[in-house]
Amino acid sequence: MKIVCVVGTRPDTIKMAPVIKKLQDDGRFIVKVLASAQHREMLDIVLRDFDITPDYDLNVMRKLQSLEDLSARLLKKIGKVIREESPDIVIVQGDTTTSFISALSAFYHKVPVAHLEAGLRTNDKYAPFPEEINRRLITHIADLHFAPTEKARDNLLREGIEKEKIFVTGNTVIDALEIALQKPCQLPVKPKGRFIILTIHRRENWGEPIERVARAIRRLLTEFPDLEVIFPMHKNPIVRNAVKPLLRVERAYLLEPLPFIPFAHLMQNSYFILTDSGGIQEEASYIGKPVLILREVTERPEVIEAGCGLLVGTDEERIIEECRKLLLYPEQYQRMAKKVKIFGDGKASERVHQVLLSYFGLRKEGVEEFKPQC
Ligand code: UD1
Ligand code: UDP
Image (tube, rainbow, N blue to C red; front, side, top):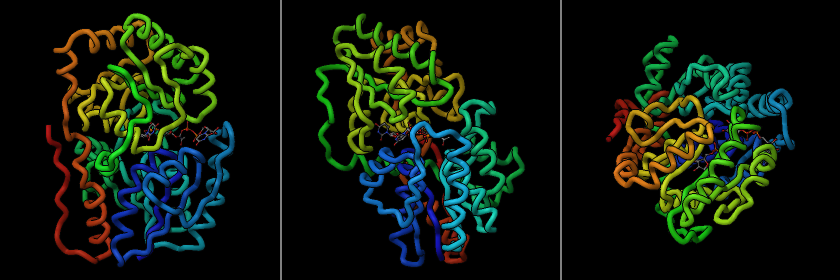
């Protein structure tokens, strides 16, 4: 059986990596890794982290690429590979433009599609933009849906997806995180005391919202002289240019994107996390770090319901207020610093492997689905 696994950006590669490894270890599959390189440097970092060498590297990234140009370049180049390889299935992850265009291309060639991290929804077409629509479109192309949680499965059922095609696996990001945390690693910076991690990159936050977040951080650093902030900046110049002038202050470390392994260790050593990232919301609850989510809505309501995360948006005063609570009141902090397995248990990639074996008639037993542990 020939399987094409498509990756392109940092998060989809981190989440696809454990699946690629599992499938490569099974001699019954021919696994081809197709890297669109929608991200260049950030993709290469993850490929090195997991020791993955793509069979194809389409090198599509352009500085400040628009969604239209990116999509058009992807469709032609991915189409060519799918046509030539003629795989038995294409696996895509999440909601990036690479993933959506790959699903579309596979559909044009009548190749079945499996979707990792299926069923996440905010029900707001423009948040996150364009990811909410990317993932909805993938859903209606896909033949197999690997939903990370029960809620994700329910979303798919509500949209009319047949229940036999949905498998609750947990999110493969937890598999990746476990791999990373098992590897010993020096911290890339040596903070003296309590430090928080900041990441921000979403389109909804470009411009004023990012600036408000940066100003909130500046004020917190003044108010708390023992506090340090570590911000591995996304490579997007729109993000970097907005933040750099505002955060050139003492105890704010503006870093290049970190490899996943040191970043995972850094998260584990942090006090709490401020982020608009999807993946980091999932990881924070697994390692028991409170996460303040710099968005108005999340497609990961489980993190809020479990009490590990809070939607704080990008209002300067609100961010300061919520950070203060965590910094000043240990009981508030402890309430959120809970290690819970709500997004995965590290076995998602094995479940994906088993479902694919069943799909190809190579396995008869059922697959035990992921159950959250709070
Ligand atoms: C993309 C995904 C988003 C995901 C995010 C993870 C889409 C539409 N968006 O958003 O879902 O959460 O990745 O980070 O698929 N750049 C570099 N080097 C890199 C990466 C990016 O220089 O390694 C710069 C380039 O100028 C590029 C720009 O960042 O044009 C934007 O990259 P793009 O992939 O279009 O969007 P992201 O905002 O990164
Ligand atoms: N991450 C990383 N290095 C960094 C920052 C983040 O490896 O410097 C990891 C993080 O642990 C998570 C993923 O990148 O697994 C999140 O990627 P991103 O925020 O770019 O995308 P999103 O999750 O929002 O789609």
